Image 1: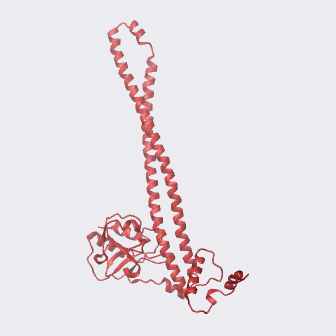
Image 2 (image 1 turned 180 degrees about the vertical axis):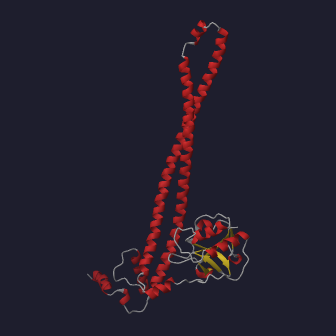
Image 3 (image 1 turned 30 degrees about the vertical axis):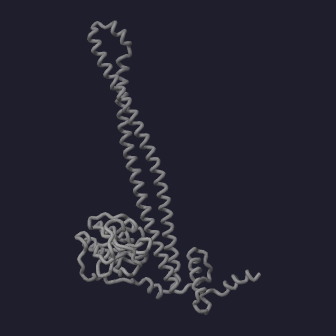
Length: 346
């Protein structure tokens, strides 16, 4: 019985109402309560302090951004599968047209032979008033027969090619469906984490929410001290990033109205004539890896152990990046997050 009374007592005295000091046990309970609230199984008496809410929301946003990059990768794979399927379908249509043309030619040969009659060649020779002329025509008939055989073989080859293409298209359809399922799952993960973060933020009062939403970076958009870009292309990428300041963060967006982190860096370098992959964990390999001490404007700077965030270095220890949902493209210090590496695309 005693084992059943403790949980009831814990429910009668919620965490937030206890005046006890913040012992290790209390903090552990707070973390567990936060996780429970995130999973949607928390009770009405689970109350977190503003600091705990902020910490958990920051964690959820970081997890959501990692999930967003996985979504971006899944979308890229889905798009490639769809393009490959479309190419196969177009090629199948072209092969079908050629097959039909071959069949038409074969039908013309067969029709001509039918209209000419199918008299036994020996009888025709016996009745022929001009045997030499008949033999010459027979040689022509053999040539026509060879062409007919070639036409039949051509039709058979084209039919086999079409069957192979249709088999490949069938496999691509299965791959596309699998990719679309993966895409939907990734999207659900992002939306679930963002929803959990928003529910936690609703526990803050107006002042606390305003303090949380206030940009931590440079709100003026002023340029850092002039530093030479790594290349003319890098300078164009930096100029594009400055032009995007103030645009909203939207997960999965690549501009020009809104961006996520890798969408911004990709758009900036695309404006400079350089094509980057879609995700943070592929962008880090799109160029020469450099040490932090070598950073120059235009370099890509990456953060967190899982390479889940990227910004565009603009000099003076600062970068332009799209931080998180509810925020805008802004200038921030590269020390704002755990640095993971840097790459120079061009």
